[in-house]
Length: 167
Length: 405
Image (cartoon, rainbow over all chains, first blue to last red; front, side, top):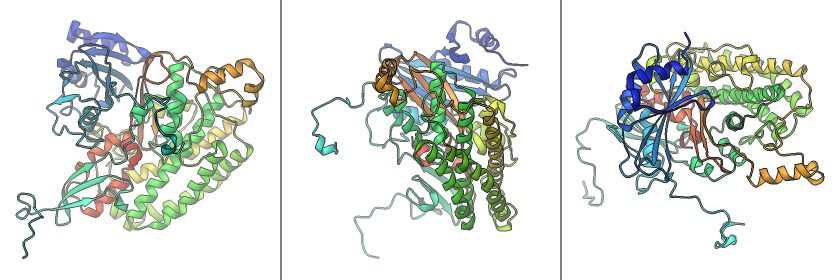
């Protein structure tokens, strides 16, 4: 049996109904959004179901959309089914003021460092994470550098003394 | 004992039975800049805590500012032992976003370069496992073939380690006859050297006893920990992106996926060696396939994204316009969101790209395989001897550049 995107979608809608939104298939990859409170329930369902078996967390990361008021931070999960070789993308949105997301470390050990990385760069607070501290940046850092309010230096700026930079 | 008021020992450090040992960040045995704080009971490890991030260079942030073609040099510096695979992975991702179809010849040339990179990466890793178990010869002996592979890159793109090889849509110039001669030379010489390397190591009693049962992991734990690549295959899962989701015409090639059973250092060594033989066979097949294809095609016909010939820029209007648009980063990029993965030398190298139609990505995330599987290290070495922990570290094939992005 081959696992099609339509079948996965059908099973998810049967189970969660209207809770899951924005079903899309960009480049053939099933992508949908779940409410932040349901992320673990959805992943557990995808993990446990005999026909779905999404038991591999390929990737976990965060994205910052400063213009979406109330849903500025997205946490993106890429899940994989080894048997049927199917990938899917689960997104949840949380407000930047209270970016609380349940941790997936109970389900996937691999989520541990990836969640620490997302916390380090975007400040997503993973509730229940065993060791939520910065991983790539220094511990003393007080901000979350990948957020869009920290733009990189304007490459056309002229107020610098070029000689100091070897240019 | 003299009073030393400026030294304050942590609470309970005198009574405790274990020793804390700091391995790294610049210890030669770590083969990269990362630190492990080991908790030791005699010579056995009770716990290990890894600290990473020493060479973090914020590539994901920098990429949000650069036009697409300028991101290729950033990917070089992820897994610098097999930089061409990273470059190709990035090109394939952008090509998928833009809907660029590459000709078969470009695909095969890419396959040759990617498999060469896989061989160089694996021979470093297996050589280093040899060094850490006391056999320096194999490492040094295979090094001359890495050198030869680097000469091939040099012939193709002009650089050796951080290659920046190829462009979006193909290669920047055609392979020269000298490049093909060097590939033939590699194909003729390397099997003999690899055979000798295997004769030296595979049934060597010291090597076998030092590596079997060291750092084992079950298939289930490996999957839970997000292992991919040779480390996952050594645990017995036959997952290979080249077969599961073929890219760059890998479906045209006949090759098998070597798997191990116990996931220990010896199995990882065997899997890598077997993969080198498979890669050699793939390169051979690609060279044969190239013979039947026109030999002047080295890029896709996408003038909007692929830089025109310099000569045309000076003489033709369209070429000048495209050249200007590409260099200034003004090419029309479609908005879109995709995840594309290639089989890197140490696992699934993924690119999660969100484009909002602007000149640079809105968000680019690298799925770096060794960042994800390195977190299993404390579990792998718990209860092992310190010397085994070192072998385990080198046989995982951790590349600090990729770990820290």
